[in-house]
Length: 368
Ligand code: SF4
Image (cartoon, rainbow, N blue to C red; front, side, top):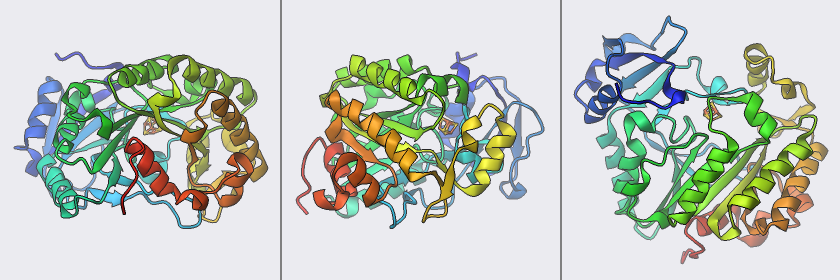
């Protein structure tokens, strides 16, 4: 039996749609999960309803568009990032995870029609080679959580070697660097890790790598010529947050230098109203969910603005003192918050999407 990382140990059953049976990606996954019970099913059989307590893996073809804009809003500044949709759900369990509101089940879905995926990317990116793209796979799943089974990030980075106009971000909370030897251009791939205060990692992020492991992996990537991204998202308001986030920022300063980092996002915990109930029911340890939240203009609940600004200011000051100031941006915040914390608004520097694009491409300015 292949040695699997701990975060995949709960997978106990494979469901396979008939039309996915002969896909090369299916063969690869089955080869890496020998001996697990497998149920073959008709494509039209509806969602998988797995009766067990462990996790189910569902191998199926995806029929929609693989590439789509990140659902930011026009009210807040969004980062103009495109989602490459590789599958749904995640084997780890973070109490605040938004996927709990997106999906009713915890079935890990892998799209097996990799050739359709790559063909769509090929068509899109070939259309205008002067147009730059910033894409990522970590929106509906963790980018690397299933890499040990699918090898899909490895396939993707290799394929994207033909497209110098595309920068791929791989966002994760685990460590899997198996794809790195397949990268033709490290300057077009951004390994990214989400970070939090040590107490939050320990109590709210089940199955993830430790902070030390994440930052060590980021350093390994930086030494191999990649720029890395860090995401403080979601920043949680909890007793002792100052000390917790200070410790994490100190660890960043010990492991990484500003020139290693493309960007660092700061995003306060925000949620659709229905997510709060799900979190409270499933995760009694998630006391932060009972904090002071108000509805934002996008319908999501957010921490009261003075508290958000206080936390952002605290983190930004410490990261700036270590030289990471130019890398900072906010995920989904208004001009008021930008100005209060960083003293500048995206409109003053050409827009957030463009700024991040330039940083993703190593400071190369867009000619357009
Ligand atoms: S690692 Fe990311 S995708 Fe997975 S459970 Fe945690 S927040 Fe959700």
